[in-house]
Length: 60
Image 1 (cartoon, rainbow, N blue to C red):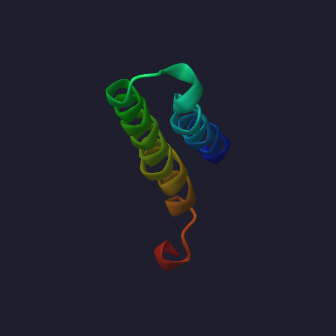
Image 2: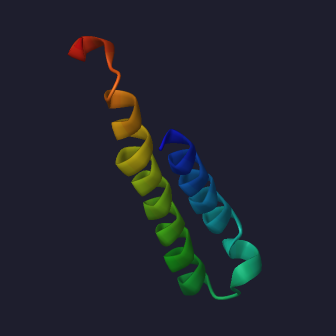
């Protein structure tokens, strides 16, 4: 699950960074960047973090 989280986070980064080539209008770029940031945060907090909390040291 951690690998899927890394892939989702990387896809969000690519979407945010690639917004310059995707759209010409600044408003559209802003929306695309915000979606990319939300995708990154979803990958980090939704997939990577729970995968590492399964084997956390403080849970043993």
